[in-house]
Image (cartoon, rainbow, N blue to C red; front, side, top):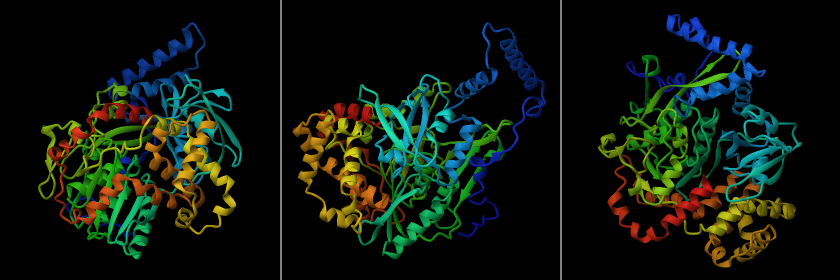
Length: 573
């Protein structure tokens, strides 16, 4: 794609990259940072404290370790997204962004001194071993890594190793009392960010984007062109679960759909250097295509920039539930020892003026971390009238629709979480990783025959009956300690069978085969498709979230609401 030329009074769309991606080399300390006496006095004060500890504390203390432990604590009193990365963590992050590595294929964060899996890369060794988001890593090769015994960087290092070698993980999973053991074989980690693209019907192309990485725009454009060549004139872009990434990619994607001179995003910081605007150039290839964008509570940052730009310009229909609400801009500062601080320097705003960032109190990060749980418990994932609207944060889109600020992107069409087949039995087998294990075992037992199939469609035609799959799975779960409860099994029939078929297809044919199967019963996808069929995504969008009409549905689901939200929150968070 050629560089986008800015209008004379506007900055080009990738100028804000400097805000979120620029690496400021050489952050010096003391007087070099700020020559005033205040900074110098504080520098001397900190050095005096460290010298006292080093020389006079009752026990011998490693000052370097003390500093490493103190920095995250200091930064936690600023905001939830200002973070510190050790040199080791920064190096691992760069490797992850650069290409294929030998690893197990997870992303994790430290939660109360314990590593928690936040993402499992599809098709990775961890995915095949049935590691799941939310899993707590208690031990690696029988070595305890909890309670501060190992840093995030040290854990990442232990998970890496020669291709083909094994790592033994002790896992604590929600709703399970015992520590589970997983032997994961290290391998190459796929870094594709467009998980799948395919034609849902003869006019509609679907794309699933899992993050905004360095190569995402190339993958996106290639997928869009492929779908266009197959006859697509309208598109569903699925950003559910997409936690963000490089802002440049979101800007370039938005430019593909917008006419010239339309605002995409702007940032406001403490200083003028951190305040920028991004505008479309009008050279995109899909300016006339109808568009639906799918979001959920895990869509964050760059996902919200793209969705917000489409919504505020009345260009795309937003479908799903309220997004995460991550709208703080971090700039990376490299420290002298090659560690780094990702410091918040500005806030993102959508074209209408909405701040994407949800509210937080400085130093109270635990409350911030629990905000998603609060959404589940108050019923927001079931009823949109449970969304907390701040009427002082009302804004207007380009063509006059009302939208709200105060945190995240609120969809034009709300789709409640599908709890039709969700019950204690499904939660239990899903939490135990048995659906993944059963599918993987089935693949191994029938790999020779499955590998001869041309595609997932042939697999679906030749697969055993749903009843046979369900019975075999119930027997498998029973052998693994979960007794069959046929009332609940039949209730979850569609969810169990569809998930198993999708997992088998992904194992044999890759992610490209996973979503076409899974999406058949996906209510958010089907709702978006129905809206496209009714031409609700024709520019300019007029659809807006009608809380009064949706609230009338509440009586039908209130009876099951409280038990469901508690079950779902405990199994998902």
